[in-house]
Image 1 (cartoon, rainbow, N blue to C red):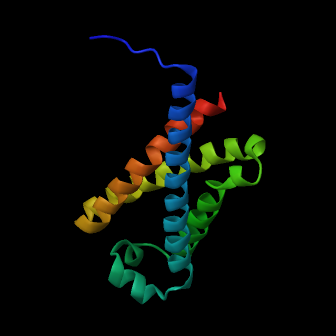
Image 2 (cartoon, helix red, strand yellow):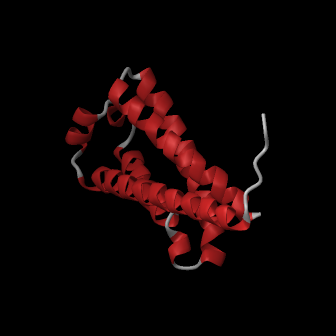
Length: 140
């Protein structure tokens, strides 16, 4: 096995591709969670119970509060667009919050035998984990 040393130009290009990939993932996460939070805030509980089983098990205020949390975390994932210096720590915090939320919801959907929603949460975890990992490394 040989080790390859990247030239400065190649290193900058790799960093540029990584940054573009991370911003793309952040945009998709923001769109998904803004839409999911909006649905939890505006849809009648009967519709939410038809789509997912767990809203029937908790109070309506908890479902609505989760919608607010999802929207806030989604907006914070895009905070560096306003200010990189102040937004980067907010981004890392939001990504950690979304990852925790996705993990809890994965367990909830798996326990409720909702395979489609569990797979959706697995995909969201696969998108959020690299964002958290690489953006946290940049923040140091």
